[in-house]
Image 1: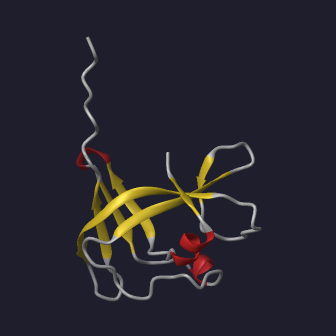
Image 2 (image 1 turned 30 degrees about the vertical axis):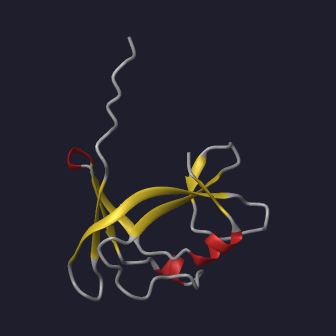
Length: 117
C-alpha cells in the first residue's frame, strides 16, 4: 500500500538525503543527509537544515513502464504521473557532523498474527 500523493503534498515534500545503510538484524535504516550533486542540480525542494528527532521520513514511489513500484525523485512530472508515499518511520536519532548529519530510523517489529482456528 501507500498514501496517494496529490500535487499539494508532492510540492511540499523535501529531499532529505540518501539511504546509507539498512541493518536488517536491528531493523535500522541510516539516512545520510548528503544529497548527490545530480539531485541538487535538478531540484529546488531540498532540505537546507538538519532534521530533528521525530521528523517523519518517507520514500516516494511511482510505477515504471512494467507497473512495478520504483523510488522517485519527483522529477519529470508530466501531470499524468501518480506518486505514493511509503512511510519509513520517524527519526529516532541524529548523529555525526552538524553540517552533514546522519539520521537513524528504527523499523517496527514485524506484525505477528496468529493463525485463526
